[in-house]
Image: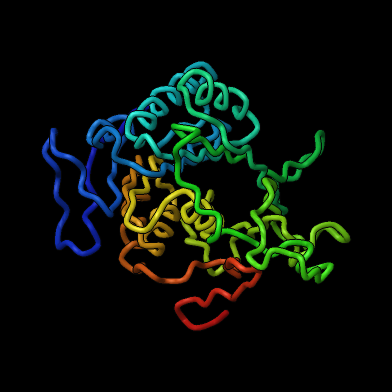
Length: 314
């Protein structure tokens, strides 16, 4: 593909764009426009606590500057290159989450686990409705989320901020139930009301509404927007306030927005000049402590609350 020239999008608080010197580290808490393979060398080795990557799936999606239909070997070689950089920049206690579709999930699991030496902690299946309707195969309604760590004996996992009510609490009202709830399962359910008799909204299986076109959360200019609540769970569990979160494929910018809301430092890359500028604009309207969009935020202790948006609606 033809890569665009690396260019920095200014921090929301700065007055004009600046271009870092070739050997200078990238300024934090902002999006940087350019090819991730050109920008990764500017990130210090062992400096990042959490990486979340939602790369192109190589399925022919219509991005504005990236060609999403490569030869399979070329695509996997490209993934290995940025994967090596992720392993390099992660702290010894760091974690890496990868979102990927069916087409290359198996190959990328092998690359990161066996070839690049990361330890797989969870293979989460993210189930959702409003998937792509098919006529000659079963309609797809899921994506894969791989959770890797660098050191399986020394890593951050904050269980209390992401606990949910247990069945003993909600269904059986059992006094023996742990009042702090339980950790979620590794299947995340979206729109449980569309599965009659299956997954109820108040049970202990993960569910997050997909960011559809009619949702207030929708940025409106990027077709592959991740839910803030989904990213919030990952960031809360696998990093602490003040630590560094990196997203090498900025996309709609939701990883960076969520990290900022949750009090983390952040760093993002985005190949598209237009997308990067829009992400910078979204960051301008975001502040630490702001509630996440997209519905109820689960709390420890088996309790929940509604997430209130900036205009005061629930």
